[in-house]
Every structure is written in C-alpha cells, then in structure tokens.
Amino acid sequence: MGRRIYDAEFETSGTDHEHLGRFWWTDSITGQSGTWSRAEAVSYVGSRPKGDVFVSENGYTVAVGVWYYTSNPNIKWIQTESDGQRFDNLTTLAQRRAAGLVNK
Image 1 (cartoon, rainbow, N blue to C red):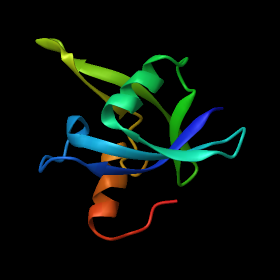
Image 2: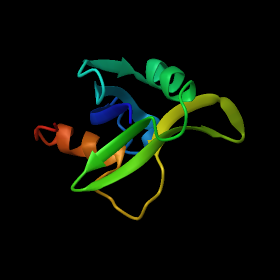
Image 3: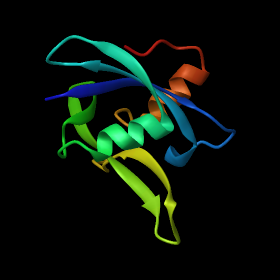
C-alpha cells in the first residue's frame, strides 16, 4: 500500500467531497507524513495507481480517486470510492475534525 489519508478538512461551507481542502496523510511504507492542499492531493492521487492512496478506518480500507464534474472537468477533487461504509469516507473524517475530534 502507499499513503493513507487519516484526516481531512472542509475549505468551504459545503459538506461534500468537492468542498474538502486539506488532507493529512502518512506513508505506510516509509513512515513519512504530511499534508496536502486540494490541488496537491488531486495531483498526487491522479499520478498513482488505484489503491495506492486510501482511507482505512474500523477495519475497512477504501481507495481514493480523482473525481470531476462531467459538465466542468476543470473542477477536480479527491473522494473515496463507494463501499457502503460511511465511517471510511473522507467527508466523515472532515466532519469529525469540524466537531473537534482527533483523527489518526
């Protein structure tokens, strides 16, 4: 595996994936950690094979991919693939952060 996103923050007042603006990650191979802006996350995730960037919560792991509006492909964001689990979703991480809870 590669980089696990363990925390996220909304950049605007919205609550959907396209409103996420900052991400905290750790590399599962090297142990390095850091943060990405939305643009940095889109660039990095878009350059990696599927599954290399992921969210892992409560025993579930889900891949993160780059998404965009079909009507405007210039607006891009990252989002978890749908797996039916709400707690491993990037927006759930951001909601917990907004509530003052620590994500690790």
